[in-house]
Image 1: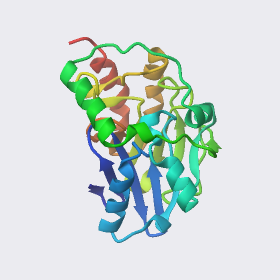
Image 2 (image 1 turned 30 degrees about the vertical axis):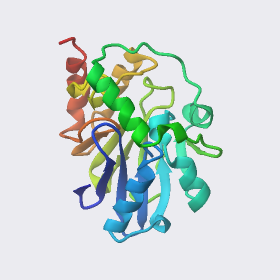
Image 3 (image 1 turned 120 degrees about the vertical axis):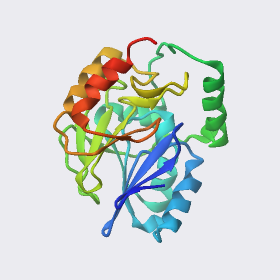
Image 4 (image 1 turned 30 degrees about the horizontal axis):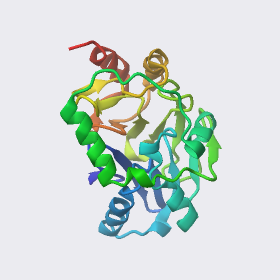
Length: 239
C-alpha cells in the first residue's frame, strides 16, 4: 500500500510494517508476523524492486508481532537487522515480563488472534544476530533513519524518523487501533511494560519534522508529532 512517494505499508490495521523506498535502496521498519513475508515480496514486485534492494531492517522493539520475518530476511538475504541494545535479548529469546491485559472485547481479541494465526505467528523465529543501536543514532541506510528512544512499552522501544518519507515510525509506543478492544483513535498500546514511562516518552516526539505518525497497530495517522503526546494521554482516559 503506497502512502507517499517514498513510503509504503504492508499488513493492515491489525499488524503493519513499512517500507522506505529510495533510488539507493529500501529500508524496512518492523517485520510484522512471519506470514507478512508474502506481503513484502508482493509489494516489492508491485513497485519493480526485489529483496536485493532491501539494505536494512529496523525493529522498533523486540516483540514477536514485530520481528516476524526478520530472521528469514537476515538469513536468506543477508539483510542486517537493527534494534535498540535494550531490546536485543528480547528479539533473540522472546523473554519479556508479563503485563496486565487490560480491557478486552471478545470479538476484537479473537479477531487479533485469528489474524496472527493466519499470518503464521506460530512460526516466529527469534533473531540470531542483530546490530544494536542507541538513541540519537543516524543509520547509514536509505533515507538516513534517525533513532529516537521511547522506553516504556519495552526498555528498548524506539521511534524511527525518516525525513525523506516525512514519517516517524513509532511501533507500539502508541496505537491507533487497540487490538484487544477494537477501539480506534490515538491511545496507549496494550502489553506495555511500563505504561507511565511510555506516556512520558511520547514528549520526545515534539519537534520531529514529519506529517505521518505510523504505529505498528492501527491506521496511519497524519498530523504533527507535536500533538501526539496530548492525543494519547486524552485517549488513555476510560470511555
